[in-house]
Image (cartoon, rainbow, N blue to C red; front, side, top):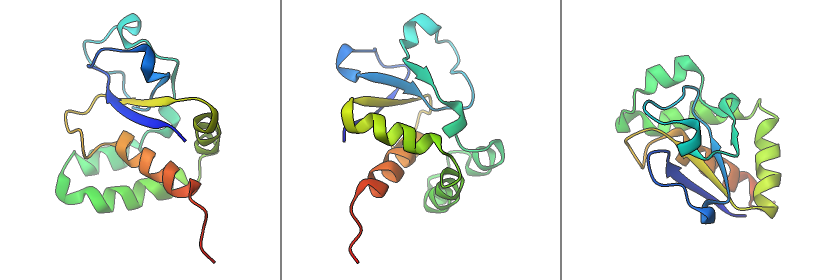
Length: 120
């Protein structure tokens, strides 16, 4: 499974594969052409309430992930994205300045965690 994450402000490359924006809001100062997206899956973004609560505060990161993962548990589109990642390289695109604490990093962790076989 090949899932990368990348800021939308970085140059789009052919090696990115399918570029999927997963923010609820369109990034400032970026044209659709420059974004070079395959898709915009804003349905996979955190809820407005969760996004505002988190406010990119690294101290809230673990709790943000827990709450976000609960939201993702209810979204069929996650499975669609995971299936795509099994055959195609995808790059989850985000706008946050924080490259370690953002919804793209969390979504990647969520999908990869679900893909691992469980140990019963």
